[in-house]
View 1: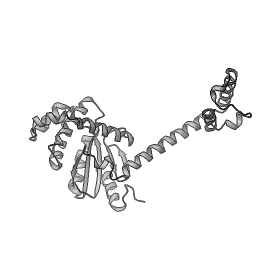
View 2: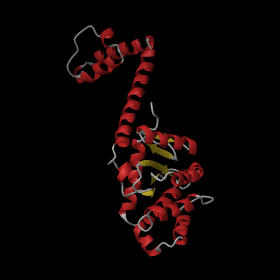
View 3: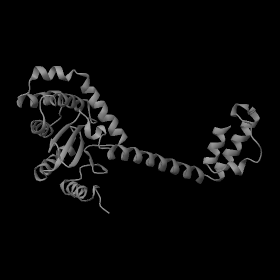
View 4: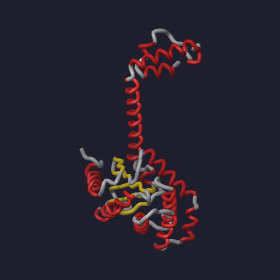
Length: 257
């Protein structure tokens, strides 16, 4: 009986419709009792439909609170995979005091639009550490490009990978395996090693990790950023990102009180 009583209590109607002692287990109700209970609940809800609205609002609020709590836990933990994973690339100052995490897709037009802004921030802010995390959500071609990039990371680090990233992300037209391999080759990658590395299980592990973290952070698009204690979805531009990074330097948060 506990589940039924809990449901009615959540709707605020248990006391209103139950004036008698109920059996211990729901399966102990007779068919007539079940029909009577269903009729009482239906009657109450028809007379008080706002109860359903209130219950739905409460459920949404609880879900949002749970998402925020999970997001805060990941963002606030300096040792979480968000900041320490081997499946991502670090550009800018490898030991920078301020960290910007970007989730991107090589076929994302807004990511392409933000590329010059990220590059400018790296040049202008010597203490900035930028973590690039593949988040290929737009197409199968995006997944292919991310797989190549994951293998390229085994050969190119820091500035060299940043060069690869810029060149591939600024490509015109759809980006997939062919385009990514072409960029890697043009920058001097060992193509035989690259082909072998693309088959390594770590490639899938890395993309699976990105997908998991993206869902935990409730990311619904690219580009998405983690700045200080904040998760930002969308191409917010140079000025907005710089302002948030400046605040992180001042108070440790993207918005100082």
